Image (tube, rainbow, N blue to C red):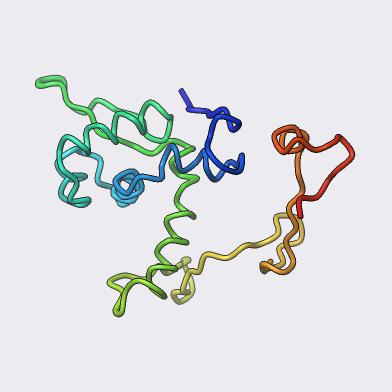
Length: 168
């Protein structure tokens, strides 16, 4: 199951960022995704890695499973125990975590404790950076070269006529 939000019911500007934050914007949610992505699948390992209170962690895990970000996989019958694993939806959050890591390295930590490297077989490690890249041409994109194009749903939510394309 995947959660979907009625964008018109969210406060402020109708936006999928707001809908995403309704789902994963709470601190423990993204820390849970981080821990599971690092291979910590058991409740006790996730609790240790996040530092979350057990009741909050239970609530976050249940919400992330209900939203389709995580799935439970049973690893023991006696007693019955399950581990948590990322779904495709959860794996799609990894670039978000990478961007937060990069931002935190620059603006929130004097001496970052970890860096991400790409180490393909056959050549040396490369530093990984979160960057916007055009899916069509592969060119890096910066803020001045991005335009917001309203979809038909966006035009309806904004109360604009059908012919309007760009939000200014």
